[in-house]
Image (cartoon, rainbow, N blue to C red; front, side, top):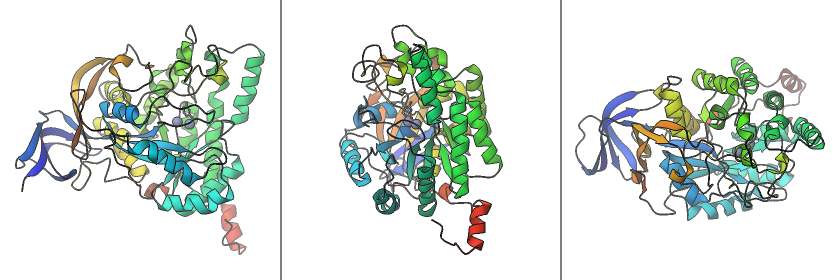
Length: 487
Ligand code: DUC
Ligand code: ZN
Ligand code: ZN
């Protein structure tokens, strides 16, 4: 028996182990792990470099139409090429329902977009913005059973937000069907009220975006979302947490044993609200929601990454160019509330976390792997096929050059955005060779696979979405009163 490929002499790091060994691959799958494996048709000498499970970026917006009708700058080709160059081998992107849309039709669209373009594997979270009876009773239950086992809901944005009643409906359905609900937690009316006052005072520059989205908007909505989920005993995951206040609401729930999971993103570790204060509208490039905060918040988020409050580090790559197709679609000098929200970051997600997290002693290597690959795979129903280096897993691997230094600049990246908010920052560590299902996707900065060679990954129901069996006391009371099936 000969392996198709052997990765030789790697310092193989998973979420729990670090072993110097070889990895044997057949038909895109890892079939052996050990020292001195027999030779393969092809061999790659890792030469003592780290070998990590391929990164999983569980929060990306690719070829997505926003709620204001704007198309993202990255399609499934540029988005996945960029992801692969940064060590990511699977992305989860959003299939966004807008009001009136059928979820099934939305998925057909997004599959058509991805199928002929993606170079790495991908899956979809649904965005539920219109939970009609058809959606809730017919479409969503079937789609969850067909492998779309997570969806995002918004508590803000005019065209996307659900009210608390609708959120309860969604949580109850997620509980029943075993899906995980992701929540964009910001208080809509608080933001709207502040925005109206800022605009009336003539405070329209991009920097006022950060004023209009205070931490209280995040912490209040986070607590409220958790309360709604707790009532019906539904696990939930709060996405893109930006502040210590938001994090505290999550920690309180986690300490009480609730199944509340959390994600943060590079923009909350490396940017502050001051980055929105730049001449010539350039602060628009860093406008995202929630907005970046301050240095104390960055440190708090780092602590949350190391102490386990966060399970997932995603990019929330939301690519809008600094021109009339993106950030400036509503004019050359739009007020802050008319600037498309989002920052790019899927290619730099792992390198930034490695350099500033691992090499600066804030995170150990296992936590790095957990946050960038293993926990997202587990939480979103892809483990152990993805997110692990084990026999039977897909051979999605990154050989990591821990010594390479890179000064970030968009010219060296592969997305279609035209800028990076991290330009000028020098970091250490970059992927050397990236494999997806045993195929060398990127080697020494060169793309080696065909457009459309990525595959859709249907997902299992994650056990993280299993309810605890701890509904609110009043729900148990109702059951005692004979109402067994309240929803
Ligand atoms: N906020 C979101 O909710 N989605 C995309 C980007 C952003 O800033
Ligand atoms: Zn969001
Ligand atoms: Zn997002």
